[in-house]
Amino acid sequence: MSGRILALVGQQEQGPPSTPQAAARLVGAVLRHLRVQRRLNLTHVAKAGHGSPATLSRIERALGDQLNEERVFGLLDHYSAPQEVIDEVAILLRQSQGQQWWSNYSDVVGELLASVLAMEATSKVIRIFQEINIPGVLQTAAYARALMAEFARAQHDPEVRRKHQDLIDRRLEMRLMRQRLLDQEDAPIMHIIIAESVLAKEIGGALVMREQLRSLFNVVENKPNAHISILPGNAMRQGSPLHPAMTLFKPYESETGKAVYLENKNRGGEFLVDPTEVETYQASMDDWWERALPKEETLERIQMYIDRLTAEPEPEA
Image 1 (cartoon, rainbow, N blue to C red):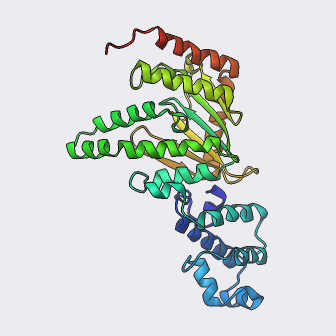
Image 2 (image 1 turned 90 degrees about the vertical axis):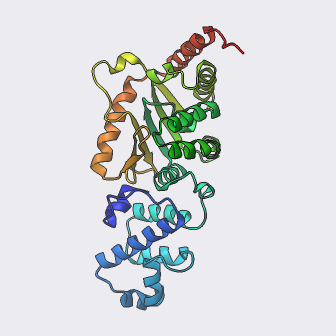
Image 3 (image 1 turned 180 degrees about the vertical axis):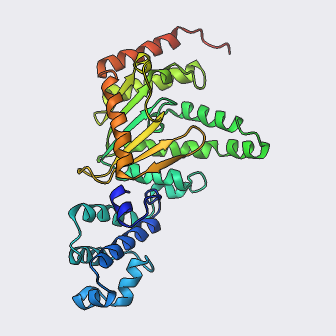
């Protein structure tokens, strides 16, 4: 969901739509905004052949059945909507017309994560900076399980701890489904920066981490749509990025419609859709991308950490 649309309807504090109904409500809000902006009432629009006032009101309030695409695009044309708004509404219409894959995981996918998944599903370009962990779309099953188990153990309340432990398998199943994003025919182009310190962490132990690094090496070498660079440790001696875990979503070819997600370790995160804020974080990511290693050096750096783990003695059975 883009900052352009959110700003258009006066909902800058909200994140992108994560359900079909949320997308339909936003389409209705956009249509109402355009109508009011042009000082038209429902009767005026109805007389132009776009349906009865009651029908138009139901569309604007997202009531009833699925949105009629022909009518929605007819209204956008009648209101002389800019092409970038038409493009964004087209994405929202697709989101409003059916269940997304993550709707089957409502027990482990909250509203915030659903928003992230919705952005991933509709973006043309995704840029990630990560100095906490390997990004979720690149995690192996064992690495992801180790992170989830660590989070569960950190819970002070025994009941909360048990609940998180009971849901690990379910969360892991959802995480692996999410990773199919990289293999789709229309997969987004991904630019990912991973801080070298992440490679040095032995999450889950040496064997788990070695498997994770080998998987990362394979993606860097063989996935043409995934451009991954390691940020060497010495690059951060004179400063640090604006946030340790940033994701920039770019849904369309133009410069409009971008959003930034800031992930906080074990504490959820937040979406930024205000264009000024988005540009600030994008500039930070651009800066650090220039300091990251090129592909061949990235592969060499990952291999160095694989070799270190390989040299460690195997744990006793």
